[in-house]
Every structure is written in structure tokens, then in C-alpha cells.
Image (tube, rainbow, N blue to C red; front, side, top):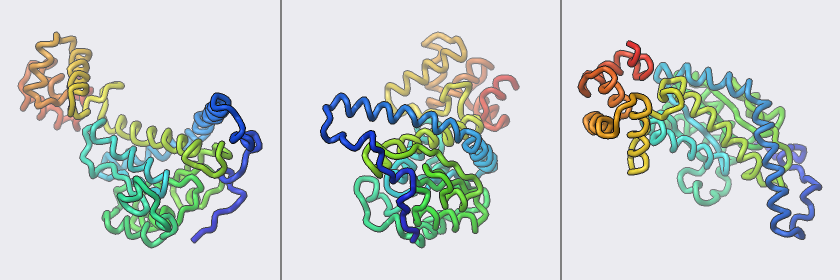
Length: 299
């Protein structure tokens, strides 16, 4: 186990907030808002490292690899959240992007004592997933020292996987353990040590970038449109209809009929309208062009 060090920036006490328990609500809210405004600035500093990691991840995913996030506590919950949003947003199989949290599913809603400190459990999680050379494993830890995450990354590296470490402290052990180290240094929290605040926000912003940009590079959007989105409710079905109309210029009736024939698949409906073909031909055309709508439209 790696003992937490008092010099970690995320563990420091900021004197600006030492009297918040005596302040009126609005003043505390303004202080928090001012603190949060520093987070995007810190993320911007790390963009070169973030970009390098995304390029490496998407290269492996294009060959059939998976993206696996690993974290403990708040970091683990954010990891699972980001992974869980990929199927509805980008139409991915749930196995393509996965989140692993120390302590298992129970830890999503309550603290599981000692789970973060179990190095062997982190390694076991990678074994259980059968992590291999095409996979990318992103360890997420605000301190950059969580033993569960370090154990997972060590096991993943030994299996030939790409490893990325996302932390909120400089010189984090997680960065040293990973091929790609991302350090978003946000400094002390409004409530000392509560890394669900600025550190958590920073991690969410970076995870947004990793998953979204990887999916863009894999052709799972058309421009900025989520054309692989699963239309699982009326709001999303209406969004799919609007996307088909925006891309093709078709009227509502034509777009709706194409979507129905396409089984709700936006890309198939677009190709049906643009090329005047049926759903089977549209699906075949997509497959020929690696499921990239832009290539299928021009092909």
C-alpha cells in the first residue's frame, strides 16, 4: 500500500475557504464557482498529454480493442458513468467501453471499506476481463496513488495493453506506471481533501474527451451529429428524425419512413434517401466503408 502524502496538492488546505462554515450560502456558492472556474484552465494545460493518449487509444480500438477505465471511489464512479454513456450515445456494444470500480457494483452507491487499497484486486479485475494487447486501460485516481488502480495498470501492462494514468497531482506514481500520464493539477479543494469537487470535475472533463474524441475518430459521428445514437425513447427518436432531415434535406414523412425501414438506424436511413437504395443495400454500403457515413455517402 502507498501511504497518502500530506504534500499532495489535492490534500492541502486552502486558507481562502477556512471560514466557509461561517459564511452565508450565496458567498459559499460564489467561492465554489470561482474555484470551479480554474478547472478548465488546468485541463487545457494537459491537452497535449490527453491528445497523445486518445490517439493511442483510438488506434487500438480501430483494430478491435476495448477501452477500459479503472478507478476507486469518486474516480471509479466517474469512470463507470462515462463508460455507461457510450452505448446510448454512440451505439457501441457495452463491452467496448467498460468501467471498473474498486469494490464492484456496490461501490457505486456506497463506500466499500478498503477496496481502494487492494492492489491484488485491481490486478484480478484485469485478469477477469481478459485484458489483452489491443486493449487500452485508463487508470483514474485523483491522488494518483490508489493501490487498486496501480495494481490494475501493472497487470494490464504485463498483458501488453496500452496504459494511461489520469490523476490530479504532479509526479503521480500513476503517471510513472503508465505509458501515457495525464496530470490535471487543480490544487486544494474548497472542502479540504474532498476530491469529488474540482478533481472530480477535472476527471469528468478528461473522460468526456477520451470517450468522445475516440468515437469521433472511429467514425461514430457524422460531423458533430451522433448518428450511431440508440433511439430508445421519444426524445431520441425525434432527434434521429431531425438528424436525417438535416443531413438529407428530406421532409418529415420521407425521413420517418426511411428510419422505420432502417430499424431506427440513422446512418442507414440517410444512405437510403441519398442513394435511393433499400435498407439492406444501405447496410452493405456502410459495411464496405467501415461503417463511416461520410465515406459511404461519397463512395
